[in-house]
Length: 108
Length: 120
Image 1 (cartoon, chains in turn blue, green):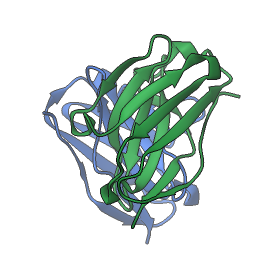
Image 2 (cartoon, each protein chain N blue to C red):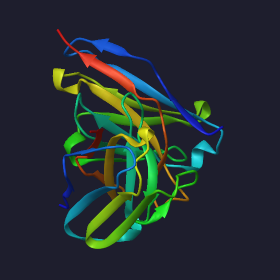
Image 3 (spheres, each protein chain N blue to C red):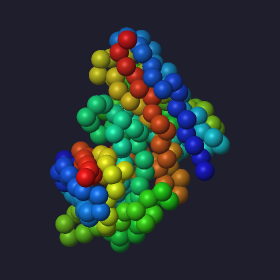
C-alpha cells in the first residue's frame, strides 16, 4: 500500500515569503493523479492543483506544483494572508483517494 | 451553482444508528461519483468510500468495510452515509465530495461537512 508523507509538518512563514511543501510517496506513482488541496480552519478542502502541476480554475498563479515519481512539491511563490492553512496532497488509484497527513502553513 | 449540501450536526450515543446526507445541485448528479471523507478532530483527511449515483455502484475503503454503508437516492439527488451502531471513535467531521471529470479524478466540489459527535 502506498503511503504519502508530507513535510514539514508545520511551516512558519511571514506574508510575502516563499513556501515549499513536499509530498513523498512510498513508491513511484503517476503524476497524472496527484492532487493538492488547501484547507482553511472551519472550511472544507479546496482543490488547488491537479495532475501534479496544473492549476484548477480560479487558483492564483502564485501556486505551482511540480514533481514526478515519488517526489512532489507545492510552491507558493509569495504568501498572502489568505494562504495560511493546511495543505494536503492526494493520490488517486483504482477508486481510492489516498491523502497525505497534511502540512500546516502558519503565520510566523 | 454547483454545490453539495450536507445534513446538520448530529449528537448521538454509542450504539445508536445514524444516516447523514449529501444533496447535489447545479449539475447532472447521476454522472459524478461522490466520495465520503472523514476528518477526526485535529487530524487529516481519510477516504471512506465512493458511490456512483447513476447505478449505486459503491466501493468502500478497507478500514471502513463493514463499519459504514453508502447509498444513493437518484430521485432526490442525494447520497447517504450510514452507521448501524456508532462508536465514540466515529466522532468526526464527515465530508462528501464530487469526483471531478475535469481535474483527473481530484475532488472538485465539497460539501460543508457534517459534524458527528458520539458520546455517552
